[in-house]
Image 1 (cartoon, rainbow, N blue to C red):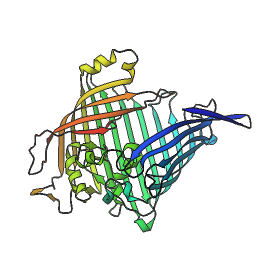
Image 2 (image 1 turned 135 degrees about the vertical axis):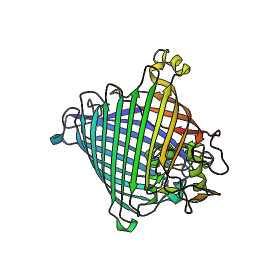
Image 3 (image 1 turned 90 degrees about the vertical axis):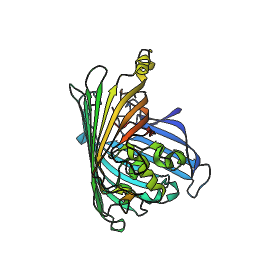
Image 4 (image 1 turned 30 degrees about the vertical axis):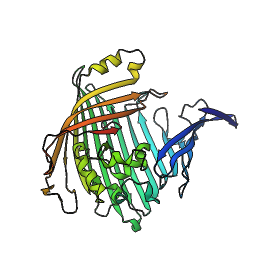
Length: 397
């Protein structure tokens, strides 16, 4: 990593550069450089904030050059300390997806507490998939331009018993060529500290879309909608997660109703070319954190104990499943059961290196064993050994 500084109108502007390597099955090793730009001394809280990157696919595919650029400009009239309003421009062409957005952001924060805030985002976006080779499951995608108007609300609060977070998201596609549609979701998370050794994490999710919605915005029982896979580099393009892992149902992209025990059922349908999605979804995920001897040992190590954790938990997922395949059957068993559930145990390893404001910034690796299903297939029993690996926390705190 290295940096450089320019001076204009007595306002030094610094760029921090860092090399970047990534992999997917279309680009091969993608080589590039990332840069962050800001007015010196503003600590990512001033004018002209830049986040950008450019990459070259070493396998030289049809579109070997990809880029991402974001420019954020505070609006003084609606900003003060901890309560910034800003306008943001984003543009990217990468991993077979073109997206160009302008958005208005407004945040209300109490002092220096990064976990106590409200934030509203309003944006207009033009986006389209232009190369389906990058998609792990192409049947989950429509290749027409979308003209989206969206509103998102985030609320994070800390109470005496724990932390609460909610996010509400509404989208409207205005492009008639891809079918005018509406999608709305709400996600609630709550952390309850039962005692020094036990914590209860609760997550609720509900989503609904109109019947003409593009398939990437529809809901699967076990995983995030396909559009949300673009939000993380590890799931953005085919091959970063090895396809044999995905096709075997060994890797979980958490989100949506998140009925993780039904991952194999969704993956089997995807492998056969079917889209196991529905226009509505609802789910509740419960995780009871239990004492972990290894985590206690890690916490006793100076410095490392503040950055690394290994938590263990029992989990229960409950949700509604309205659609699983065109015939609503798999093999000889009906899958019309309105309410399904799974349960098991898991461990999550996390490395958290706080940023300059003390805000969490880390990686989460989960290993879940959903050994019980309420609605197994004819070839399965209710109790059986099942396992999956996931990147990213289901409940983020």
